[in-house]
Image 1 (cartoon, rainbow over the protein chains, first blue to last red):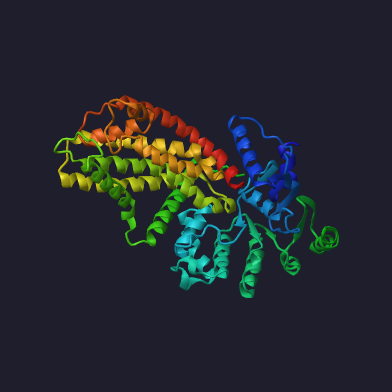
Image 2: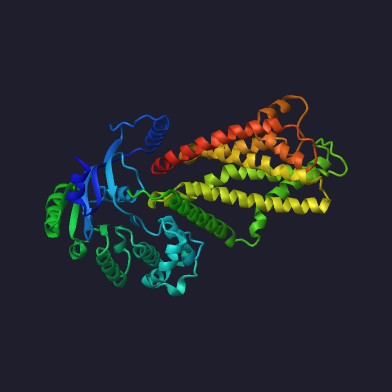
Length: 265
Length: 263
């Protein structure tokens, strides 16, 4: 495939994954041993084999999809289907064992709650540290700081150490930071399940807004919410992609009938 | 992926490193009354114990009148603590940032950068204490004593280099932190910190194969106006430490994520 060919056909995608795969190990001791042997091979310039070793499994296997600007993709799957692993690979937190990620811009988001907050620092200090960890410079953070505070509705508490925050307040602050910093691909992992109704509405509004200049990928188990905001959905089952559905209702139907029904065993 | 220009990458690295460093210092001293004094209190108490042992004749020390044992031993202990910090702070920092590494993507080398800044900060505080002690005892042997900064830097470089080589094992296996605790305790005793370089015996042999000996003794020789006779050895330690450090950075780059995702 030549470059010009791909450029003309798919110039609008922000994110493309191709055969994305990630191995995990069920056993801790073995996992550590495999880790050391992989590191050794890597340091000596060798190649790490793709084959599964005892107790290893594919947490994600051969997942390929395109995400275009303006798209809001929901990831559906049962617990352990590989949803969070996929988000972490895209965010660059984990390294894929196989496959490629072609990302044109930045992919940032919340893949778990309250992370990067130091309980003994104030909310204000945490905003700066957290945003710096997300890859933003002091100047960029200065510019959006007031918007972050307003969005989180925490202006009275910005000088309070975050250890006095409730879990809802944690989420509000964390989400406000990510959302205001406007990555090209916004990743949201089940955070909407924690906030109260008012904040949830605000987040949904923010997600819709985000599709004006970027794309969103989110994980949720609430079908109503998915119907409301998603423009497409990706179905994962035991690490494998069942397909990407541009018709969200169709995707949810397939998920409920084929995946929820088949796998309770 | 967009390729960002080098200067942009560097600016972000510096920005993040500084933030992490500032956050650690602030968080560490916020919940304590004595704050920065905790950086020197262990060294002072440690030195006091050795002064007591020496006054009871347990330690042999051939110092002159204008070089009290307390200055001699405190100098050694402070720089040993600087060296220990250079090994330990990267470990502690990585343990602290494990959860964040698992959940945010950022330049992990910034954690090392912040560790280096914290070690330099701690060393600076200890050197301030030392200056006060030197002023109190009226010790000044000329401007050449400022050269101590070179072997002091070698000590830190050696500490960081060892730290980065041990890191993957330290994080993966609980045995390593325990062994490390033992090793630093024995290391303290087998380095001429509270005693002078032995002239013979098995202890001389042990201290001479110990890479910390040469730079530490040179620091003290320079500061206390002695004849520095381990300069060549210090230089060899410097070269070895530099190579270990550069390879260590590469090891860190490759291992950081691979290790953390498995623990």
